[in-house]
Length: 144
Image 1 (cartoon, one colour):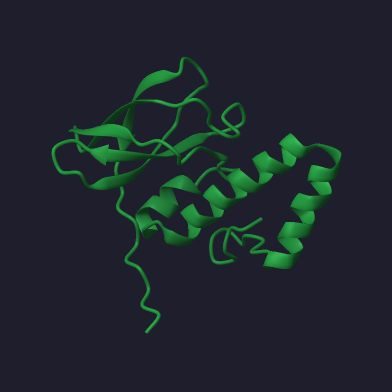
Image 2 (cartoon, rainbow, N blue to C red):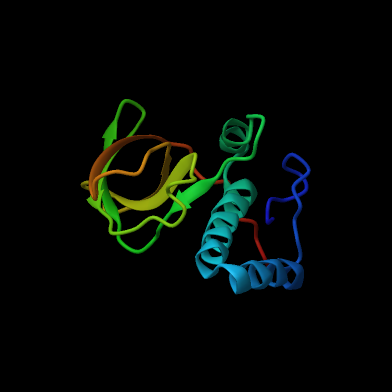
């Protein structure tokens, strides 16, 4: 819904149309509306703001990825093998049963820096350790 047209001819819906679609779905099933909103936001921002190599990797399959997750409580990210080992405790991850990838926030151990980490994963116990490849986001565009 919010994937840019430049990425696999995404829909790139305008705000009014996309909110209308979420509203209509939510009228019939509020939980489905929430998962659509959360995953569309994660998928669309991933497509718009990740670096070119990460976008190519994430969007290379036959289907668009379904990115699930949360952004409320950071985990701890420990550098390992060119990526990170992420550990933490999360009480929810919107859309996790449908997700092909997970997004969350991790604080890099020893630096205090944050890293938005993505990993494939499955629903399971509340406390997990995940191996996460790292691809830095694309440089922010100047608005000046």
